[in-house]
Length: 219
Image 1 (cartoon, rainbow, N blue to C red):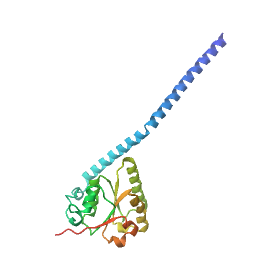
Image 2: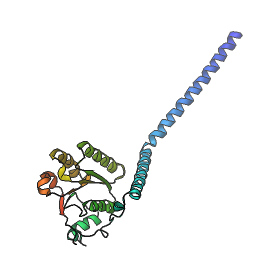
Image 3: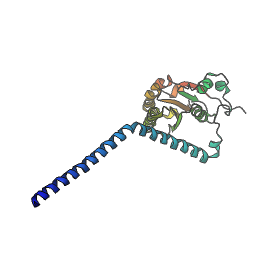
Image 4: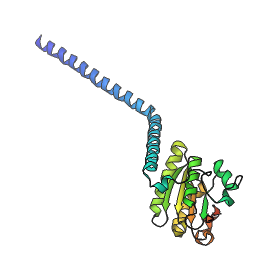
């Protein structure tokens, strides 16, 4: 009788262990199903959270920026000068207003509003604004911007404007690194230069950009 009782006890313990293990496996399977089903939604939520942080960062940056930056014109109506390219009904103004802006080179002396105009384009079209200086930017930094632009475009459909100040300082290899992204319209390139772009910018890149000559403000 004692041996029989011990045998029954082992059988009962084995059944309990099997139930516990089975329940755990079922919970793990259900958890994997939930996570798998929600993966797409999770990515979407993460993208929205990332966008919220980006918007908050831009707002904070504007509030803490120097006075000159905070007073920078934020619309074409606030921008003074350059009526020869931004007059009502002009091709550039219509392209900005209708969100048809192509890659462009802004050519003119310092202080004529090249950076301001590029920011207005981004503000008007709702595109993300990325800024690099050709004086210090490397090919790796350019590729990082392009990688972010691709992720942004694929994630939420938001386009990117890459403003490259002093684009004439980029050598041929650096300018060539921009070419595929400009061709694919992965980014809208807006280059600024004080030098004649027809001599300083690669012909292949220049042929894919519109050139606008900006003039000094009148007295």
